[in-house]
Amino acid sequence: MLNKKITVMLPAYNEEKDLPVLLDRIQCALDGWADYRILVVDDGSRDRTAQIMRDAAKKMPAKMIQHPQNMGLGAAMRTGLRAAAQNSDVVITLDADNSQDPELIKTMVERLGEGFDVVIASRFQPGAQEIGVPPFRVFLSHFSSAGIRTLVRYPGVRDYTCGFRAYRAEKLRNLINLFGDNFIQENGFSCMFELMLNLRELHVRVSEVPLVLRYDLKKGASKMRILRTMWGYVITLTRGFLPLSWRIASGRKGAFNDNKR
Image (cartoon, rainbow, N blue to C red; front, side):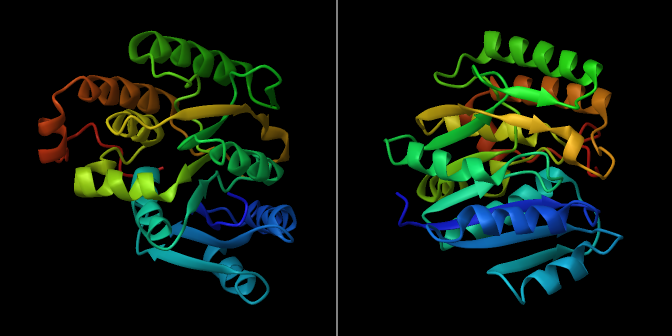
């Protein structure tokens, strides 16, 4: 699996403070063993995110897709995963805020080589840590995760919402073929939970590795709207229990869809 073509996909919105450091960390983590490219989806940033990517493309295998306006994390994930899955064997997604360590990518890719289809960097595995995360955020994430695990019970999954994941690109292509544009409908932060629910329909094998989440390293402000995100989890969970044919055929464009971050 280490000799496969890897795309590292980052959804980014106003990440000028953290993106340059993260890009360098990704390059250091992957140079020497990986055939890789970095794909950043600039989701309508109003800062220097786009210029940073243009400069990065001159010194590393990096490219950018730009949204003309801020459309939300889910929209950036739809754009990025479609593009990343086309010409890759492995797709890595992680947050653009420098809070997740790219050195973990090699371990995750090796785990894919053991026969798994998705590997999640999990906050809920032994050895995981959350450094610098506000206590209220920690409480909410653990509370919501416990509720989701109780209701969903996906084998191998404890962290349904972390954005740091490794996917077999073939499984993403299968997912997109099955759901079409609806493989992600949520535009808010609950899109990561929705993606796992939809992958469940393909019976993908999932494993987790412990994540050390470093909020103390991020310089930009958090873009998560906590109450709206929690409500998004409720809507996503409700949809997840609907018949597959309805979920494939329907597009949800109602008031609960958070279009911005």
